[in-house]
Image (cartoon, rainbow, N blue to C red; front, side):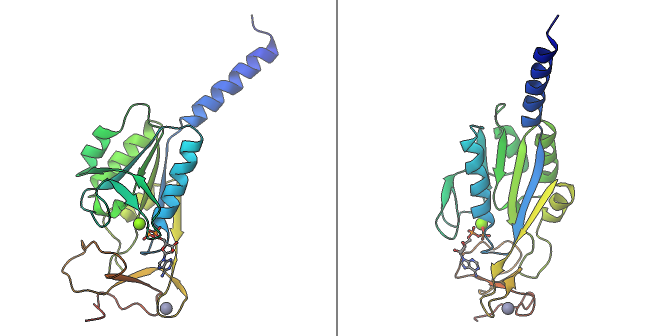
Length: 204
Ligand code: ADP
Ligand code: MG
Ligand code: ZN
C-alpha cells in the first residue's frame, strides 16, 4: 500500500507526463513579411530549450533562399527537411518527436490537414506557418481548413508599404501566372486592405 502522499505525487507526475504528450495543432498565418517564419522559429527554439525533440519541415517547392533551411526575411534560419508531399512528411516524422514545425504550409495540398491531425492525435504538437491569402486575396491552399481544425490560430500583420497601416495582404509586383509563384521582397509587397488591388500586378 502506498502512503496517500506518495500516491498523490505519483498521480501528479503521471498527469504532467500525459499533458506533455498531448498533441495539438497551431496555425501561424498572415501576409508576407508579417513575421510568420520568425514566430515559427521562436516557438521551435523554445521547444528545443525545453529539451523536446523537434523536426522542422518545408515544402520542396520553396527554394527561395535555401533548400535545407527555413529562412526569415531578417535572416534568422534553422535547418529544415524539404518534403515533396504530406505523405513524405508523415513518413519522416520520428517516433520520439514531440514538436513538428512546418513553414510555407500553404504550398501543400489538402492531404496536409489529415497528416497534421494524425500527428496531433498521436501526441505531437504541430505548428504550421503559412500565408492565409494569395496575391488575389483568396484563401491559400489548405490554410483555411487548417485554421478551422486548429486549437490555436495566430494572425500576424506586416506594415503596409504604401501607408504604414497594418498589412494583411500580399501585393504581387512581378507578372507571373497562377497562385504558386515563390518570391521574396522584389516580387511581393505587404499591403493593407485599402492599398491592396486584388490580382493586379504592380510595378510593370
Ligand atoms: P514571413 O515569414 O511572414 O514572410 P518573416 O518572419 O520572414 O516574415 O520576416 C519578418 C521580418 O520582415 C520582420 O521582422 C521585418 O524585419 C521584415 N520586414 C520587411 N518588410 C516588412 C514589412 N513591410 N512589414 C513588416 N516587416 C517587414
Ligand atoms: Mg516566411
Ligand atoms: Zn495601406
